[in-house]
Image 1 (tube, helix red, strand yellow):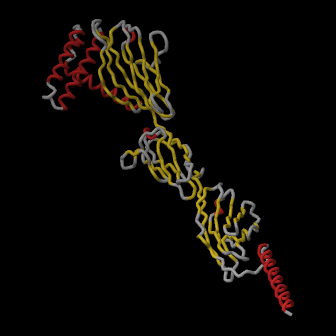
Image 2: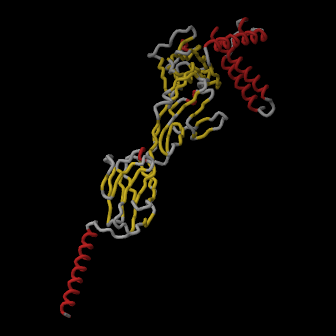
Image 3: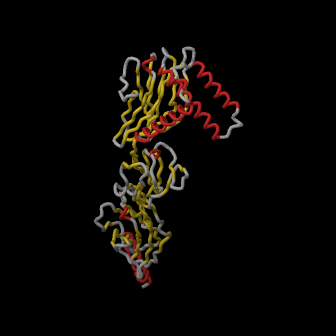
Length: 431
């Protein structure tokens, strides 16, 4: 009887052991119903990813038991994955997990449309979930429209250069000149850069001409830029530094003018009667560009004979107009040194130059009448060396009494000296 009881007890123990072993095996295969209370061990970290890269969102779960983990797109309520299975048809989405504790959502080749909230969910009752945000940043890109293209304007008009760009975050736009020169603001100040989508230039000047860079940046590399060229059209203007040049016969001399024009001008030299100075022989003309719109004109004459003395004009023409500047080349005694009368007269157009020439001739005539014109009309000879000596003395008096004369007296004295020189030249030409 005792043995029977022992055998029966052993039999029950064996059966229980077998059942426990089977339960363990079934649980390992995921078929058992073990009571569990799953929870999240850490929040989902938000991520910021540049467009085109890969993004990873991680969900950490403890004591999952027989429950399942799913990833969803919140704004569209789209189920992306359940456990280790990808549900969405988006081939860029994948899932990885480790030890039924870490579930990582992977999105390849990130697009701007992937920006938003993502949810990690456990199918408990009630459901447990947490969310993480995926931010997608986009480097700046400058739009072809309404961004300005190269512009051609007339001097004095109002100009606005425009630049538009996209990107995330929204780009900031900076303007600067390509040649590193400063930008003049409407209030007259000069700065190296200007921020804003529009660069306003009121009453544009020729100095504004050149290339401008519109630079867009938002902290996401690379920054981008676009080149906008501003072309300013204006008629020619000529500046003559020395309108009176004295030279010795048999020697060489250089006549020089500065011309500014855009479109670029045609430049040449003429004599008193308008005939063009021919290149070659005694004459050699040279034109040197000094920037986008400035030109230096030089006429070399070597050697000088009595035929080369007289008036010369440097001429500049473009499609907007023409102008010229006058230079008087007079003869000096053989023992003198070539002499320049420094002036700085700018000729803006041909009509103004003619009016100025008529006024000068009228003034010289009145001056000769006041003097009586005896030295020329009576036929008395004038010593050119004595006349230039007197001119030198007048200049010396002017310099020695610089502190005595006021500005108006100085101007009158210099005008007198210039007129006397012209009279001397005229007398020499007549003789």
